[in-house]
Length: 630
Image 1: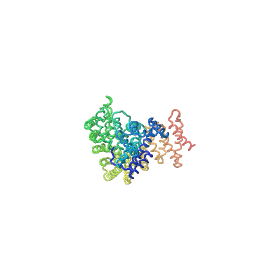
Image 2: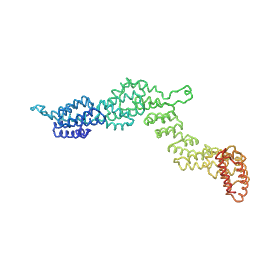
Image 3: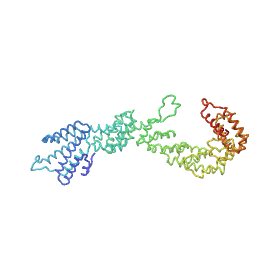
Image 4: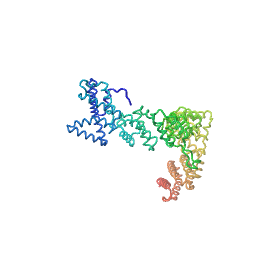
């Protein structure tokens, strides 16, 4: 990690310890003033204070050797006369920094030793010839300034084996950041800040080997990948050089066939490599080529009766492989599978880049033969919803759809507004044409149900529609209902009644009152009895006394009526309507209702063995009649 030139002011800023920084600042001032001997002396002083500061930091981490040295130094310093011992303590700093704490390398130790020797020459002229005094040059002073800062003052107190152990211990913590940016910030405050190349190499290769060989939990692997990518952020070129040099050898020599999935995941997760040997590439391609995208059948029966299921494990490997340039084409070939299987990937795959680069191009190719259902399933994934190719084919399919098919589309969940707009426009065209040519027979009575369903759907959909389309639907429903027969109306689901004009329904029922009463009297199911009673309530004002009598008598003659819970509620409404008729008409009906009440009393539903709702509704109807007639 060589830097060509470092500015003096930057050297000052790189110092970690405040006291050491002051000495370096003093040394820089001396250098700029031409006092090069003083510069070297101040630089050594900075090294001594920085070394002591590092010992204090190591003591906090429980380092016994650092604690011993600090006690020894304090003892010498407090005695006031241990000059020889203090001198030895200083002179031993290069050796102790290397052998005891691995703060510096062997080469760096030579530089620090030379600084100590030159400091002695500068501070003790008796050690040199009086005729030839030691001359400190600007180059020498600057060299020592740089060596002191880059080798010691800028670095944290942990390097070498202790630094490695601490870094790996940090990564093992469950609280270690799992995104590279945060992990990089974390490392900036620890041993990896301005680390030596040997430490960077140890961390990169250590993590790489572990990820390729060891069995780890997903959380552990996530932290390790985060750490490795963080190192590549901090030291991009160094990490790239290390991996380009060693990665292929590790894979070929240490990764067994059973663990090649780890290799693919590693190569797809780490971007700090440019080179992979030819044997590694061939093995990777062969692995992907033989990878089975579907789960293996577990038994003879599932082989024939259970649909093939995609293997989530192998899919995740392929997703990683898609990020490796020389494997991308093989991955694309693997995903030429049935369209619905391809669409089901959205439940497994959350990688947006994979969807865009691999899945979307395949979907575009399949769009021409896809059904409208399949095309709509494509855009249900937000990653594909704005693709112009898929939208083009959806547009064409909607134009070719029948009215019934368009209605079915409206039931799709979470359709975007542009799809509704297409349907809206096509409905306008189809319904308008039907008025002109009746080409699809949309307005014939037998086709009233699709129109009513369409109006019902429009009523409850929460999206914007053209006003003229809604008016057109309302007009078509109104006109079509004019041709509807009584039996056709009875066949309509009751939920559609609320979208038909109430007066039209009443006119139809009035014109078929006899047939309606006959249907009620002969009701053969609870729900049909309920439906017929609702219709009767709608035209109660138009019933004759004889019809009233027949209706009230039929209630107790047909168990499908008197066992229908909701019929009681409908008869409450029927009674209320009879109470609003003319006084003379009410008198005609009174004996019928009195008889009806007496029959109700005879039913006498037992609360212990009768449905709760039936007992409750029957009681409510009796109370209503009693309150009116006394």
